[in-house]
Length: 353
Image (tube, rainbow, N blue to C red; front, side):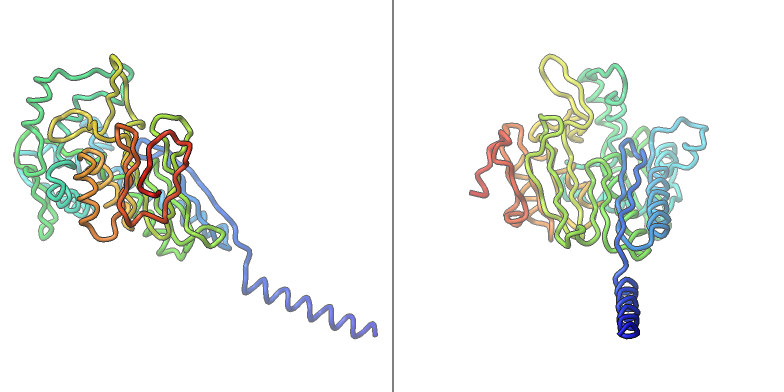
């Protein structure tokens, strides 16, 4: 009898080992870095912690590379300035085309396409105007209207020529500056996603300060629940949106702003006026590609709500949720069933009733 018990114990042990081999325990690895003026968190799941850590490090490295290419802030003569394609393009504006990296070509091709589609509500060539507003400084000021008017003459995506065949970019007017602050973070997030996918990770979440990119489902096998921030209550949520294998990107007037005489001045400028957009508190775009979602969230924030909804509805697999300046929550019909709105948020929401 003792021998049978020993044999049974051995068989059970083998069965447990085979199951463990076929079903390795899932671990979570999470890391955070400060990139592109925000904290970026990458959270991944798998069975090999070392592999997860290496994959996340590579993803951060890719994001940092894109950030360096798109940075328009470095001082001339610095290593950061020499690493930036955007600085090189701006320096040669009105002089000659500049040969750039393929990622810069891709970023600017996408940016120009949707600048055209949004009729200038998004514009990558608004740097001359954004430079006037000191949102990151200690003492921000409201530029005088004449200065804005003059800088608007040095703005506009129509001055931008992207030549894929020659890998060159040319800004045809001296003084016109590219500013990819409303698109590069989304593109960098999408590149990080591609790194993780190629490394075999099938469950992950990238959070780049309002830019969310997911791989697969959460640990429970369900879509990720992405919180939509309350624009006027620190730490509050107006609801959640379900995302699986996709992106949710929010542009809001609460990230960088200052107040003067009861008015809020935020960093999302309307390229057509040179002043902060005033139709919306936040715009959240849900689609697969984070680069596209980043661009569209900016354009839809700037546009009047009816035009923003029309833009999103006319695009394939693009959803939009707006919190308007008069505290209404509206969204594209296809989001119904994927969002949960907090009934006590203090905002008016009639669409789901």
